[in-house]
Length: 113
Length: 113
Image: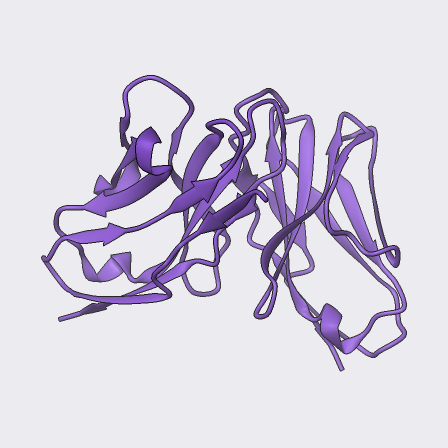
């Protein structure tokens, strides 16, 4: 158990819909990262927050957004969903210092039908 | 362009045999280097990491990795595999003072009895 929790575990929704994925980091970690794992793209970094502020952005679509709240949990919002958004979404956390040892949650499997 | 390459998509090894997984990276300077393992239906677990210093790094579950600057490689090894080592293994890198991980495509390890 990495100490990172993600909810829900599975999500099935239809195209065009909007969903919210939730992540709680390990106790004491200030940084949260979101990754997408799909068969065709592999594991890709989406976005990072540090203590409530966006720190880095990767290959995140404009339809996707994220935020980190004062209690340090984070939410990833996916809107206007397309079939190609079906993937495993991981959250990871770290203390945010250089060296970047990230601890991953179990993931949320999103299926768009 | 920066990249992480895992040349082997799939490796089959007998239980008790040795295992070596290859990872090559292409970055301007030596990045931070990591190996993660993903068991079926699970999140990613950090096996080991290299930041600097001794180029032979020991990790959990009996794994070790060797950093070779001249070859831009960070290969993962285990002297004797167990059936429980069947999983997908990812090499990941993060540029120094950057925070986002870039992952290789992964190597699936099958262990036969």
